[in-house]
Image 1 (tube, rainbow, N blue to C red):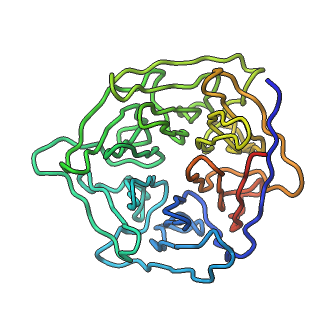
Image 2 (image 1 turned 120 degrees about the horizontal axis):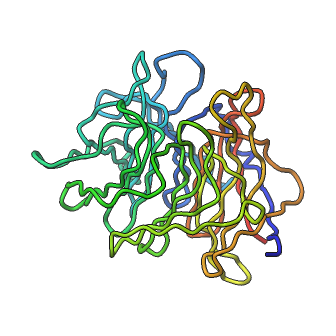
Length: 329
């Protein structure tokens, strides 16, 4: 397919927040940046939630400080938004950086509330194991968690938390083996898409997984390596709608590649768009200034209009603090 055109826009009005392995979400027109790793020391030092406006004419930026009533410091957590609420699940923490066992708890932050709430499942039900490096999406009153790394090893399970009932439901495991650092997105409230990841041996690619929410079934769409993005992990997957053609795409950008035992991690800078209707990839070509290659960054989208990224690790292993928005042209 012919490449798509896009342009990066630096959000120079936002303060630098050097961070990796954090979460980035959007509620209304405000970016929500949570926790992550600001240094190489253990345990993680912060559980702040930064609320930052996308609009440079809005001067107000708010930081919700960590408190005993909120989530503890963590890395490799995952976040998703549903209506006016941000949900966070899992992550690693403590001196040994192990998965945080919280009994299936979600943490919620509602726009305007300025405080966290612990959302625990009803007593007696099953719940997902503690994990880090997983993915989280939300749609139609449910929050879905997939894959990651537990104390027992890699995972390939899929769970849904029914918010109104405070109940976890285990769904069909994904095909293709266990993995972490996977990209995941939901479209139309009907399908969950999965791309790339790390299986403990190397970066994954060459296929896109699709979960049908109504029928609890998975299917796999394979593609020749030369026609799509190379294997990667710690990337992203965000739905976008082309402003001209109105076609629906899934956008993946950046990430890391390589295999276990490699002395040097390769950080990627390319961007690809998956045409959902045509089931084909096309490369996204950008003009002007662009972000550095990176992995373990935060990424978020809103309403299919743009992709926002923040922070991550660069090729030198340094933590980045910059903010960017990508828009298709």
